[in-house]
Amino acid sequence: MSWLNDAEVTLPKTPAELLADAQAAKIKEINDAYTAQAQPLIKDYPEIEQQSWTEQNREARAYLAWYDDQQGDAPETPVLDNILTGRNGDSGTETLQELCLAVVDNADMFTQFQQLTGRRQRLVKAVRAAGTVEEVAAISW
Image (cartoon, rainbow, N blue to C red; front, side, top):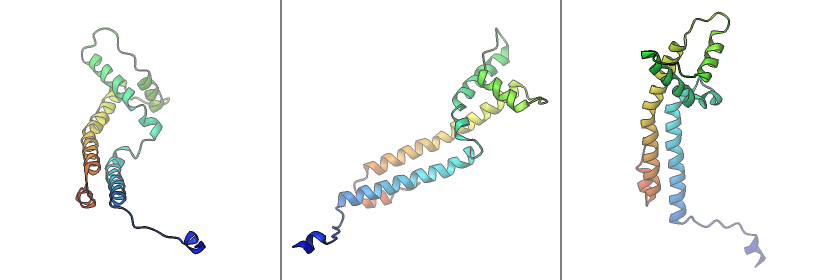
């Protein structure tokens, strides 16, 4: 009986295990395809800079709204002011308005990209709802 204890026996996977494996692989495939499409948009930006995008966008939109009518005091733009100082260095000529326009253009591009975020989420939901390996295999990016 000791040979039985020492034997390496691999039992076939159950249908539920096969489905779970297929779902995990398909979700990875979907996420990889999504990331591949996002990569050209973010490839030149370090992650730490990306973390400031929401604040950059907020400041830029507030400043541009003020810039259009210049009623009251200009909004505070500490993040953009510091970025502009770094971009201009000692001899730059970029204005805060120009920087804000560039930030908003980039933000609008990323907003459009969010359609792909929704598509990724829809496909992952479909994968999780699939009841068979065949149903999972039929889902594609």
